[in-house]
Length: 108
Image (tube, rainbow, N blue to C red; front, side, top):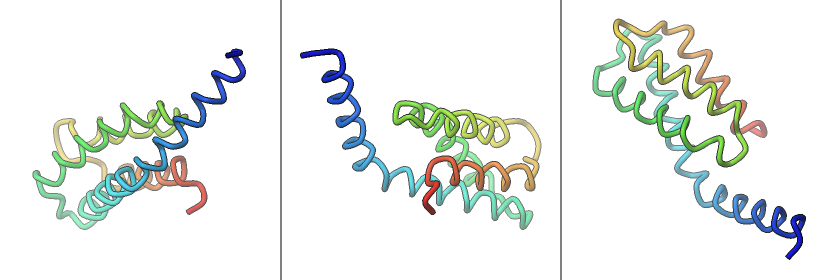
């Protein structure tokens, strides 16, 4: 098998994995969006904050594998906001979550 054939096969496999993983990524995005809405309303519970921080961590670790390096960068910033001390900056959180959605789901 040539290098080009190997690259094509790898790309096809990653595309298939992305199709199977996309619904989970969409669920995780929805949770981050709920956290951003909660923060904007001053009603971000500690439970939702922790869950969203964990989701951001998972997205930061996985998006790059699918070719979404920018998504990884943004998810890391969200994670830092959510796991840091104090109340996260609601406007920054909302902006980053919207940016993440555009980076991962540009067709939306």
